[in-house]
Image 1: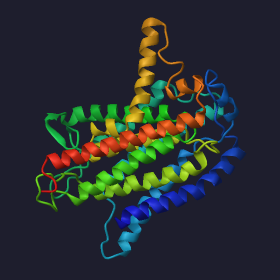
Image 2 (image 1 turned 45 degrees about the vertical axis):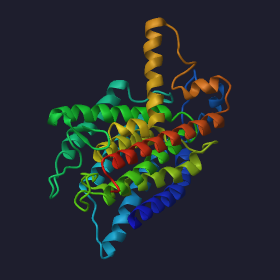
Image 3 (image 1 turned 135 degrees about the vertical axis):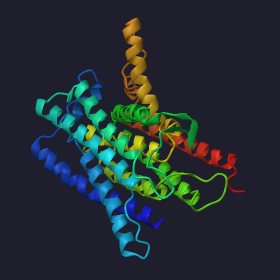
Image 4 (image 1 turned 90 degrees about the vertical axis):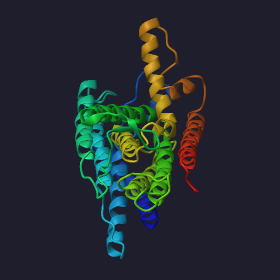
Length: 361
């Protein structure tokens, strides 16, 4: 628990202190956000607001995680970084780099289009393949690897196995889906940052619970076979702290945007945590807001191409409510509430599964 608290606290402090520095630097360099011409009229005033603030989230996340392990190394416990924790962080950082390139191109060309779809998908593909290959390596003494080639809900579903190649395909689909879902959600001040903090906070609890009921330490029927659950909780705590610290400056009215740098990184982190904790299907519930935002875009495209009519005034569907007359802050707060409900419901399902498997007996 100490390592989790240290990671969250350090990441939050670093994010709070580093973000205003980035605001000044990016403002001097002219790294301002371009706004969609067809977007809500109220967003026009945001043009020129510094972007690429996701850099602060990534740096703070690594700082929190690293400091936690340095403190542990100085203590009698001496826990070192694990393969699972490092791989999930590397996945997030790799996608953050793809997002950084996308943001930088937008700024240089002064338009709201960065990398083309093919280039972005290729970047996500390369990062996902590297993660998938490495995640099935590095077995521990129980022969557990950071990820499993079985599909999972709260635990691996043994009858649904992808195999090595199938897992690489599944990993790419999960990484591209969640990174794009968070990217779609990042359309209002603080919406993606606040929602991500709730999802990551849920994974702090899940990781710590899996550690407390790990099959190597507990004999109960409801124990968990996860390679490094405590370190994954530390990763989630560091990322949560980074999001909270960034939200201090990103909440409405935003002084800086996370950009694709932050949204793709957080989406990759969500995907990585779901695979490393064996909760891939449960993540759909926990990250319900991200899933709904993604579905709204898909439905808008499909229905428009088939009927030439729009299901929503604008997608992602948080813009639909803005165009319907809701104030931006009203949309943000209500969507935060939706994100919180999804996270709590997902955590409830996780706990119910543990009880149903014989936990607590």
